[in-house]
Amino acid sequence: MCCPLKKTSHYNCFKRELFIMKTINNKHPYIVKILDYHEKIWKKYYIVKLILEYCEGGNLFEYIKINGSCTHSEARVIIIKLTKTIQYINSLKIMHRDIKPENILLRTKDNIKSVVLSDFGLAKITPSNQSVVKSRSVCGSDFYLAPEIIKNKEYGIKIDIWSLGVLIFFIITGKVPFTGKNANELYNNILKANIPELLSKEKSLNIQPGLKNLLENILVHDPDQRFSCADILNHRWIRGTLTSCEFKIFNSASYIKKLRLDKKKASYDEEAKDNQIKDKSFENEKDSFANKKKRYTFFLKKITN
Image: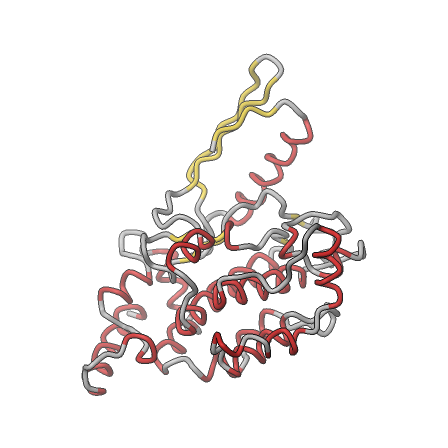
């Protein structure tokens, strides 16, 4: 990404994004990696260049528009990865403030599970001498704005959870839950939305009851009552529908360590694909249970060893 910036405010935004990316320092497997950066002044312009890893799969929005909504099994993996990512940046006192499908990239072509979070241009990092991450700035993408931002109230890290909920709805249904003829109508629909009623109208889309319950706890107008990242990861739909192998992998410290240190090996998703670990609900595998168990065991050993 190379941009000539004339306004000092734009340059300051770039510097903030660069500082946040350097703070993250490529330490999380589901955040796009920064490879290099350059900046110089030419005449009245700031010339800035931010070099990021190449993600050949494009972004999640375009993938859904071309290929259609994802399966529940795919959604589960995406939710786990993005929730762990949000949890990580929140631990660094960072709010992303622009969680949306366009900012979710796919490392691997045609692999919707290979998601990484990108674009920290609107992110906010709280100084180390402040214990609570708070802001009042109105920013983000209209369809994904949390109610507290629309109300112009002070907000915290729970805004990223709301945006994640809207994103989950989008990847499952192929559309956003809140619409309007203009911004004011959209904002009004977000503030007045009855989430259980909204989800009940999606019967034709066969959203699983457990996922509906998860969304009802994420898309909560009161941020104090809204699920946290830990709540999402401990929800019965996330935990209950994982195979024993997947559960051990996603909750293993050695798994994260493996992804951080072993840069020469393929990503988790490619390994999963190579070893043909597929969910029975959408792949209709004809293999016997014994053969599946052998493949799961082999993959688990490969990840954790």
